[in-house]
Image 1 (spheres, rainbow, N blue to C red):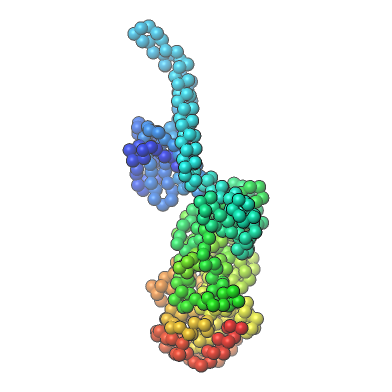
Image 2 (tube, one colour):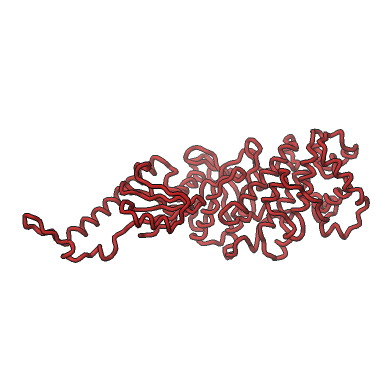
Length: 484
């Protein structure tokens, strides 16, 4: 049988021309087809379902795509059958006419050519009537529409933003939907490896991940097409700016965003076939849809700039911002999924405090936001940590305390002390209790007064739901500093 990787066979009609087996291996699927006289081809999926389809002798078609987690086999004639001896095919009929030895090979070749022509015609018809037919290869087309003048965009002029891997522009797909087109820069991968990495990215599907619609690769010009997320990035909502001054997210929205972001990262780390290290977790890469659900973007792109990293679950470099990267990144140490955990912990603290790590470093002369927050946490001064704009509304302090403690665990200097993202989700959900976090390494070198009263102050706040009046009057000075 001829093996065809990333190929899926189709039969018409599918309900009567296929046999389906569940949870069997690829080799078992091939053997079942080989042993069955009525099977002409088989398709086996390696996406966790282990489904096996045996194709019966009917009209068989199919398509190939690097994104398909499937392997197909088709029965072909052996070399001995393609050139049989005349005695093996000579048939003496009653009328004395003997069938020539050349008739059968010609008939076989003619049949194969006829099937190929029919398959080509069917593929063309399906491709014309359904733009999504054809799998991965059909995804090349949207870029021609998204970047061309025919959309009214006048090329790449409508810029939405720019990240570590390139700028993002607004584009229009053939069906009229608006999409985000990312122009990739400084990609070292060859064409084949580039498509393999993109196939991995496109195969990811999760509520809290930005959906990748397609890609385009032509010489040195490479693009990714994403769904356009309506409300933009989290950055605009938690950090005060003139344009977004009137759009402040309340605590419940923030907590749901933090939880959704954790779920998306946990999916990349623990639920994908291959662990995907994001490498650039920051508020700019957390987008919000029309219901303010978190969607992580730019995942999988770190692998594009690490073409020689064959070891599973590690990278040698990332393009994250200085305020969010883990200590091991600039130290030239192996970058693992725990590096994403550190970045997430820093983002979680920014969600709670409404302050940027760089802002605190400049104003309070601390090295990191987590160190400043831990100092206030030791004093029991939680109102200094929480975004002062949130004090006007009711707060679930149990969730606030859970988030603050978890952020300290995630931002530990030693990666081995940080939790896995799956446990991070469970801690946020309250399924796993969060222990008292250890002091950051730098905080141990500073003498902090009042540390003995930390646990009593913290425990009172962590079990109650309070509103703005429950905080001390000193919160007004913090509010003025946060809005300046």
